[in-house]
Image (cartoon, rainbow, N blue to C red; front, side, top):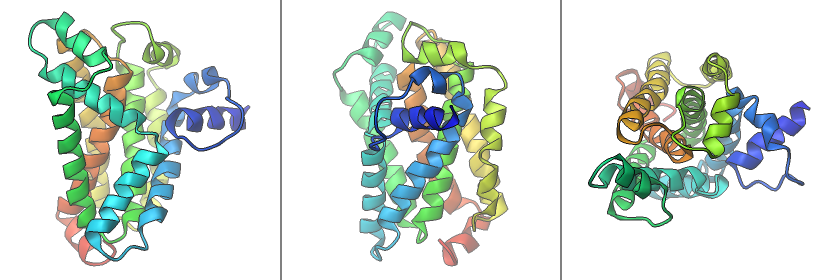
Length: 249
């Protein structure tokens, strides 16, 4: 049962070839497992890039690896959210822009700005393996937060996950982030990164309820993408991260 649940989680969050499609409801009932997927995606992307000496190329390869492993599924949500935020008019028009299949200027802007921040941060980090594991695990924590607390504005995949989630799921998800303290990452930037992973989905929740009347899968996916970028920036910019940058990073 546990292996099938993990397979369902990874089939939902990655494009890894894991055999026959697992029962998605197994993961829906245990969405607190989200951070476990971050160890996989962050680890694989980090391993793909850590051996490259040039910081610019290393950062680019890391970003490409993350997008490929995740199938750019959550990135697509970020683009849709950007369109929804930039749409003019009332809630109905914003929801239409959020949920249609076309990508507009708002989506391009949101995607470009997030990638720019991610690239800038990764370019300042030498040990991208640890950075990406931290960023990906905490990105998935933010998604677990929105899954549990984000009321859906329509039926769909997020609605299924939300209805199965319990209010205590994010607390369990946070426990799965605990192994990050054993990585060679100073405690202060790691603590700030954890705070980021809670603040960003909270802000998106408040904003989405006001603008769209609730949350959908695009908002949840966007939360993961934005959280990853800001966590990476925090690891570089927090004062204790200066030592981090000069030694391991």
